[in-house]
Image 1 (cartoon, one colour):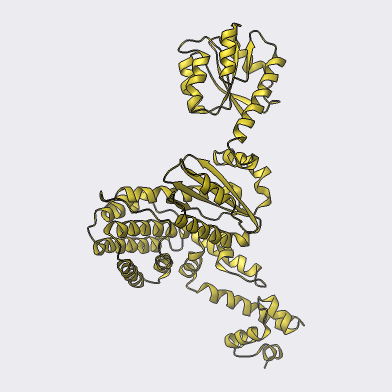
Image 2 (cartoon, rainbow, N blue to C red):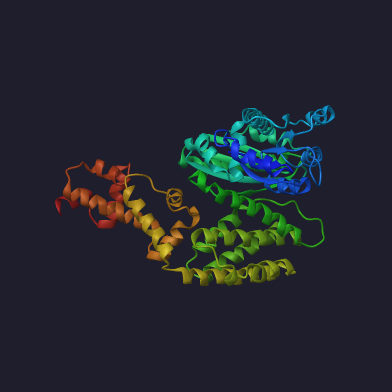
Length: 495
């Protein structure tokens, strides 16, 4: 629906426009009005309507001054509706690209026809900013108008994720944008929106199973572009979501990572800041998972010692190390919260407990001590969350999914999508709640199902193996014997 703002010093004109124009038929609505030009300018800047209907002479400022003031900051198109028919007014208004200059009084059909022209002009103006209509709808979506994009773009896709990219210089971005638009993203599409120095990449996949590989491919392309282009940039990666209504979650994660990278580097010493990097070395990424998958704090501390050693071996500057540690702490918290509910800020006291001490630390030893205290807090917090209703619900859904898909290949990505959590921590959640390794449980249920089929059906052993997720009968036989002490044939005969 298109939004309209009215600026006119006559109350009866405002009332007539609001009550007599058939707004629903025009797919438009009035979102505000003012009798003063200065007030109108402030409210239009705040509300950002699509169409402005304005008088010429008003208190505060004229309609022409209003147009001139807003033309650089507002996307709206303007209709002049005035009792003054002087040619100079009309000529100036049309030179300033007004849709039309209506003379009062005008009949409703004439007004509605002009509003239709304004809608077409607004759409044309908006589309000129984008590669195509899809990206225009996407911008509406990111601004909160979700329905149109869902209906016209996203209904054909099963998974989505967003990447936010910040350019160091917004004046020379054409080559970067042109390069990104050439990328292929497997069974899906990449949408790109530019807003100043920031690019928003939305990757949609028709097959949810390909989302993880698509994300790896796009990240690889970004790293290659980052290494070769002169206009340096950094970026934040959002999580994969399975429905368009969940895209704000991915957008928020991408924006938060992007802004936090800039924030952490801005807090460093006055030395020239290193170019921010969106991804730490792979062993640090693995360490994030290992820290939370460890069974005890002592194991986590051993992993942290390896993190410290890795950073030392890189032989970076103090600022580089500090940036790595701060980003590592931030990602660790983010990953932890993907397995649990968000940590209560008053309990964590994030800035005082973690960030401020890290930024003030004078060496790597002190930074690692702070991280160790943070990890100890996470374990304590995890202990308090054990057995929570939410976690039990997640585990119940995991079990149900496994039982319904015993004949299929089951991996962490499948389970992560089922409960909308990070794949790295599905097994951690499961083990904490049940005391059992996740993949041991999957095997246990497959063998249990195989035993049932062997006793209660005449299916061939090959068919039973496939019904339990084993395409290779020989491998199935090995697993079955290991867990039952008998071959499948012996078990069926009761030997």
